Amino acid sequence: MKVAITGATGFVGTRLVEQLQAAGDSILVLTRDPVRGQRVFPAAAFPNVEILAYTPQASGDWQKAIATCDAVVNLAGVPIADERWTSDRKREILNSRQITTQKLTEAIAIAPTKPQVLVNASAIGYYGTSETATFDETSPSGEDFLASVCQAWESEAQKVKDLGVRLVIVRLGIVLGDGGALAKMIPPFKLFAGGPLGRGQQWFSWIHRDDLVNLIHFALHQPNVQGVLNGTAPNPVRMSEFCNTLGEVLNRPSWLPVPELVLDVLLGDAAKVVLEGQQVLPNRPVEYGFNYQYPTLQAALAQILQ
Image (cartoon, rainbow, N blue to C red; front, top):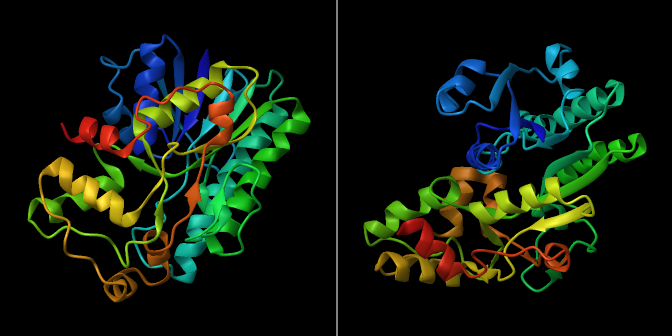
């Protein structure tokens, strides 16, 4: 299989490229920065990877290349919780997802030979936040900013179904691995200053990066898989339990909460990503028979931090 990937140089994308190459697939990396792409995927180590310059707002060779691919994976999008949500940042968060997906679907539409499947990322922010509700793939969308972003994101992806292309939307939870959000949480614990963010009662719906990559690989290669899949582990926890488990694995205490006020000052509206959460269950991956390597938080953190 030949797979085109946007967001391939990111935290999830790099691991996906590694797995696809190991499985013998060919990978077309669509990137705005081909120099970085070549640095991340040097030809000697990644002989199955082709790097192609790609600008969503402009036509080019990348659109023609879509016609040579059996599948497309769209992971593009700027980080959500790394800075304050100014009006410009909100626009960037939305456009980096909606416009990229729109241009990909347009490229698929004009391709004389269309890919068989589009696996498009979304996020569990689709559901809004709650300390009491439980969400699965059939739950309605929320009404906050992130929910509106996810709705616009997914709406663009839905257009490929009219083209006869199988669509899988993976709503990502908090991805744990040797980087990403976890890398920012570990240093305070190692300094004996770790603890929950805010009150600790918010839900933390997580997934090990390898399980997420395996789920995407599963969706690509199983023709019966379609529709929305929650990209989360089957055992979400509250923030306090997550921090206690992280402390146990690191052999460090979890005793110093980060006050909500501090996060509000640092991140503004973006603080809601870590101060508010949602309990999300991956019912459809389980129904399809997907097997999790790391279904529990203890096992996931032990593997990552070993």
